[in-house]
Length: 596
Image (cartoon, rainbow, N blue to C red; front, side, top):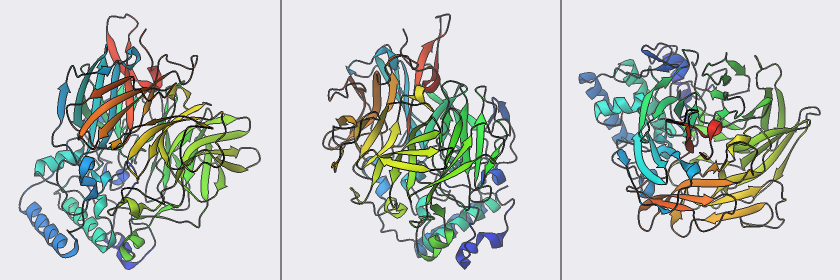
């Protein structure tokens, strides 16, 4: 189906210099994939398997046609691609692991694993199964989930690929066939887009199930762990009793989802609903969705913005959804003419925030606010205070996606990413912002029982480069930031800082409370995250006390295999059923906490 709805002339506008966005490329910073618009390529699906899922059964084709396209691609790469460029994202601990790891039981535990950690800690990230034909970017890799199943103080490690349509087809061919973000720069990028179009038109590749990687983030809703990449639909993954993971299929919500799905949906811990959106390169550029606690997707609500942008995250409160129209624009013309990446940040434009009643049937009630130019990839939380909506977020100044492309420096001197409080007055229309930290922090997390409600503590990662986590920072929003600080250190609103030490790097830390709900102390719980020691090449899972932020970890679990640096994490906790006779794995946002 891949070419349905597109004219060839429209696909070459970038080469001819037209500003109109070509609707066939998507490049998303952090947790990204490239795709044809899902609405066009995934409209006809068979094999509905219940629960809003579709069995993924692509039909690629080998033969002379496939070999001819491969030969043409090799010629193009030889003539146009500079193979001397290093693949930074395939070196060191960014490099993939070769194989999946079935459950490895009874691992050594240094310290102890508290009872409230009974469940499974999972983190997804890129792990390309096949070497790239030409360019490669960190965000191109096939999604692999690394899991630590914890039960009664014992630990089991495993890793499994998200069995996407993309991965299944490349396994069929025994090599890389899909276009990569690492290719999308300059005129070479346009040619590689055409190579993918050719494979689709000749039915070498089957794009009817999308081409996402499932490598960005994880969330649990309506009994399913969802593996997400924002250029595709969610993949449903089953969490088995022994911790093993099984990809079930692609979520289309009984054919109600016909567009892309964010990697950062929000789950209301009170109602059990999931709130989400998708963005694209053709109008409507943003589409808002609400999914009931029973997994039923409501009608789409198109959101009007001036042009196609990158919108990686959003937020909810009790009554509102917050959308971010930030000036990271989709510009294929610049990709070709100026040899830039396809999303370009415009430093001259304001940052716009749209606040919509979260059960709105259309966009008529949305209110737009403006703040100074910035980019945001990750929000911590949002809530309402009187007439104001408050957003806690990590704000970037003048981001340049080229610095994430190929020539990445180990440390980025001009990389500014700071925690901010933003306020939007729904009565007066005024907006304000307040800096809460020095640079650089990202991947902010909170006690998920407070999602959409006022909370006190934020746990974020301290970065010394675009991708390396050197510590975990605990912010107290009730305290004022210290004046005159030039770096992140304890004092003021920085209540604690867990330093990983020389040569050791971590990942997003997930908060797991000792007791579920909002009736105990908000920070009474643990932070759990993956770590890697570059001097020894060994990886582990670390657990620390979130209340004290003590430098002495509660537990360290050395892992049998290296775990590459990755993206977002999640904790699925085990709770007893009412009868007490059996156990099930449930979600952090809904049922997390200690089993008493």
